[in-house]
Image 1 (cartoon, rainbow, N blue to C red):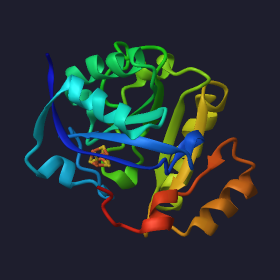
Image 2 (spheres, rainbow, N blue to C red; image 1 turned 45 degrees about the horizontal axis):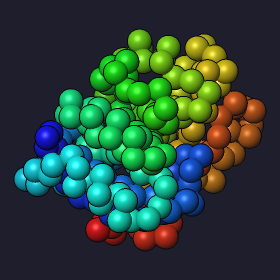
Image 3 (cartoon, rainbow, N blue to C red; image 1 turned 45 degrees about the vertical axis):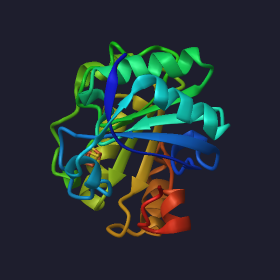
Length: 214
Ligand code: SF4
């Protein structure tokens, strides 16, 4: 039985993307291959993990009594056993979201998984980290997210969206970096440019601020 390095599990509302507002069980795996400037889960990289057997994570999701589960991090794909976990959750009947930073190959991720992929902007500190071959693995149900920290990030992201016709490939989300960019300003830029993107706010931040949910 595979074991995974786990930071925390908890039930909350999904705060982002097309599932925002739905009750969701979160499995936050430990470790990450980046260190973004705006990271709000540094504890997933820094704290000692608990080693949990895969089946106890599936049981914890079952006990939550909600259909939706998100495998997140840190960067979940740093652990090969995350693929086994997602397979097991699918087999158990869950609707599974994977939140990933886009730097590691998505090929082995089962097709039924909804992929929520962060394309790191310059403001993150990792503008060259995205694995371009992942683009071809995104389908119409998947989500590509840009966390925008500034006007420069916005222009960089919009240029990518347009030059690579990203909106024709999957859902494209622009999100203001919490505490760094005015949401109203980002909304205004999107409208002025008729940008083919979906504006989003982090619902959990509005409800609970920076409070850690566990
Ligand atoms: S990829 Fe996510 S978890 Fe990793 S450092 Fe960046 S924001 Fe934090």
